[in-house]
Image 1: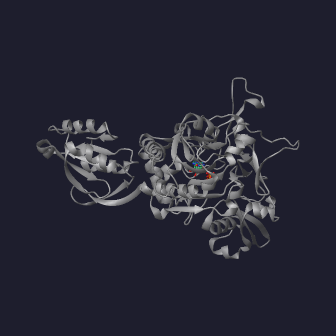
Image 2: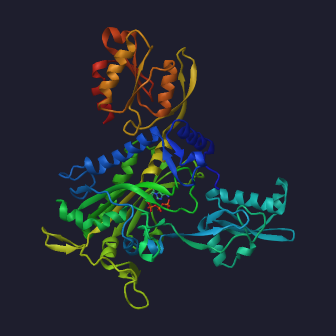
Image 3: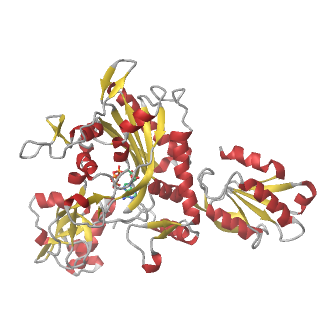
Length: 547
Ligand code: ATP
């Protein structure tokens, strides 16, 4: 494993997530299940707020009458919710059945499994022993990890490390094997002797299931969707025929996806069950490059507007050789998660220009690129390898009188990765004066008010003298508009601390003066400024601050 940028920070975030009910391991009382996570009371509210913000900003709140800043033209957005299990042919035509796999490699000694492409190795020799040492570390950590592995293998003390003779540079294992290194000579990342790594095997990441009671034949085979996007493509015509949308327009979907990841890791970052928020935006081929740029920049700004720290975000355009065979341009929005090594970023969202690949695949059958063109892949018998639906998914533009297969721009985001990035970004430790004015350290989740699970906490200063009744009155009226909590347990300082950890932006304290003049103190989580405001104006005031 790579040595992370800030493991102690990450440990604190994971522990707060557990302690405060943001995220729990799935089926925890049975020891958990690798790659599966549950969202507790605060977590479910945070994730729902994030998905609602996406849905509002992309779909429900979209103004189709005017072109938003940077957009080539006004456009429409529609929503959709498809099934998780779809016709198996969907995955054959999309390419997932044949191509959605990783190479895995097992270690017979440690019983650990690795992604083949995640292993890096280098020849090391000491006296009469020589081996190709490997590690699953990444980035800048590789040399130190290799040295530590070699030191252990040769049985050396720390001061003898310089006696190791290294040959060549650290090389990804697949490239090393292609250049002649054998697995018999390779020392697995967690093994004590060379030769324990198995030959790499292809592994399809789609979870398979069977449909119906009498499962058995190949016809019953079905898959849990590994992305929500295909449900949108196969409903393209339904949406077009039943709503008033015209190209350019987008179809949006939020939903669960499943990938049988070989090595789920880094908290929820790489899970086996997760949620995606995907847009398929359909446009005229001639305008597609401009729409690609629009969506890339628009999605980038969305994360900034919700408060992610700009210096931890990166927009990375893929190099030509990194692009999928159908793509004319792809950019990733990435975040510097604390579990990554310095200088490394993890993907939050990919924005891909997919051309007409998807709609054509579902019309004609699985496509491959040949001599620069997309053509239907054929088997030895000359027939399509995976037959398409045969349905016409082209679009007739009744203004320009042209017919074409729209091009697609796909902004594809992960809800769980976004929640994780916002949690990591929000985590702060600082000092605040306690009730006696002495500095007290606090942990505070500086979540954007739109994302905060609880918007306001209503706290009667003491549990008597009519304060709980007045606070209860405010609680009931505010709760109709936003999520809030009533808390009368413990000192006010402790109650503030609880809300700071939950990320609640505002605390409203009802005190003796409130009974006389119906005002209360409004405490801001981040600035700690306390203002005296009329109780009856609180709902309007907070509503304004929330937008
Ligand atoms: P990675 O390279 O990190 O596996 P990917 O390029 O395969 O990601 P996409 O297929 O582009 O990811 O999926 C779109 C988005 O879905 C990703 O940007 C990410 O936010 C989310 N996502 C993909 N795989 C996972 C996963 N295993 N766990 C959580 N979120 C995921």
